[in-house]
Length: 231
Image (cartoon, rainbow, N blue to C red; front, side, top):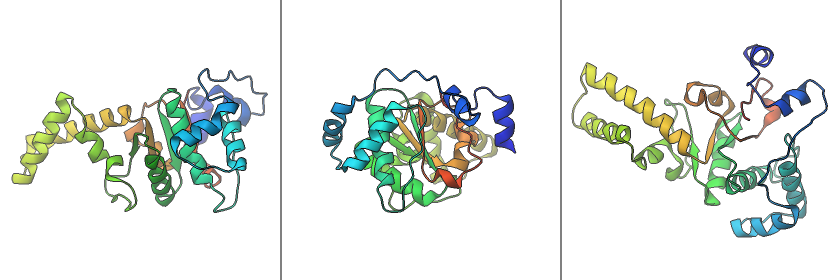
């Protein structure tokens, strides 16, 4: 219901191309300016160090030429590799941030690991009460991204975190620490080239107000209520 309500009243809930597709109207899309040309795709994949077969190469090329695509295939056919390569190429083209989602944490952990293997700056977001998946590299965690921040808020946050390890924070200190944590989390998210999370988390407070140049949803058939927000 929330997704349908947003679709009806919020013109920014999804791109004009996706809205036209959902409503059954013809797409009048302007293709992005900086995309990999079909003849260059195989070379780019080789530079990324990823091996793709001819079918995967054709799918990737087709997705890059269209504003909206749906890729179907049985388990084990290489869809996770396609997600990773798409994320890497889209960031390589300098189009902006990419959001990669799936309905399950296991699926998100898997393509986060794969994207990181391609040398892409990727952030894996999880709910605060959920432990990070064991196969996700530490460099992809929110903690690692915050540690690399050089802002004054990040410096203050780290100081309060160290103080909290030495003793219990007082009421005012804890409130200030929580405000700093929210601020630096937002900073880390906005600096990451690729953000990976579940579809439910994508609609939460951590990504509220964020705009992504491209959105990739794995296991999309399991998420009837997804509302994508991207330009």
